[in-house]
Length: 168
Image (cartoon, rainbow, N blue to C red; front, side):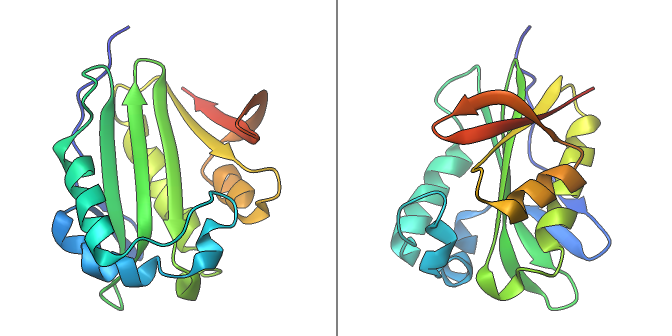
């Protein structure tokens, strides 16, 4: 099976706009992602605006592996007009590996759930066989988001995280 060639396009949900990632989003996203608590389960520290710009340049350039497609969006809360987080999908012949992060000030408002549901619905309209996410067993909020997006835990583990999946 070959990897589908997809391009991120704007996705609209009830309250959110998922906008294809641009390097120009880095300054605002550095503020959104500045809380070190966001790294509790994934490790590392918040990126500076400069580091985030560099990272976004790499991401928007696309995967160097022709068998892999990187799709990245920022989450804009339409009513406030501000960015609140990101969603992403790494697509290969097996399916799409998705992830999400919402800045601390916007957590607990259903933004991650709505964004993940919007992303999974968009992926369901693409030639993608399955959707996966890897979730730390202690991250109950991400498990709730995955469940709401239609993913279920599997018996597979990778780097201490449980693989969740949704197949067509």
